Length: 280
Image (cartoon, rainbow, N blue to C red):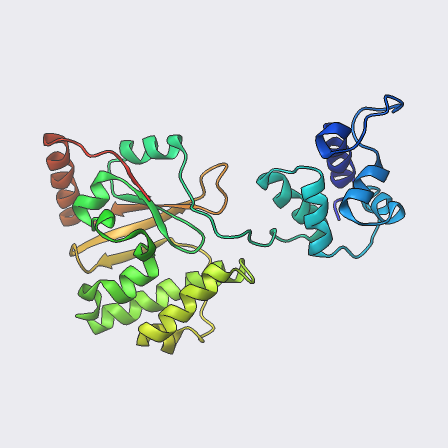
């Protein structure tokens, strides 16, 4: 554990809550503001001694279930929950039940301002936002139902342009799965990931053949040929601040022909009624 940070963090979380906020009577006899250790222990279903040891940063075994109860008791935000698991177990917090992910207004405005195609992915590679140039140059994601806007499914199953070029299809599948294995490993037990993998295993022969390989790569960055657009892009990936499970993917054209075609698409986009950034 990172002892000092954990001590200060848990004490701070206790101090900001009043007994009435968690359903306890306020006797007005408390010497310090906030909850007592006894209150947190009782609400989380652990002993006072055990919770005291945790808050003191002692070297004790702490299960994910107990950390979840403490997180709930102390009314932690999603970011604070992640921080608690990082301090105590040195790993990301377990996935929460599936919910619809959205992008912030700041990310929407940035997508509209970027002069190259760009999309936003979830950790499971669901496409949840894209700019107008992505529609002009790559594909209209809005034409697909929301549940089918998964980038792996689109490239390996939905888009037959890749399958018409077996060599490119094989190389693309290997590159995508090498990165997806890393993302999957960071979401143990997430039923949404398991559902996607089961679906692709049943519906996509190349996924079923390659998924068990040990090839891994930790970045989306690569220079790739886009089969549908016939263009060469350099992919770069960024994590938006405040949305650690999302990835902004930017498609930068990297030869003269591709630059020219993106510029043409940009001019077409500006000459007509510009569509706003699309979100899932």
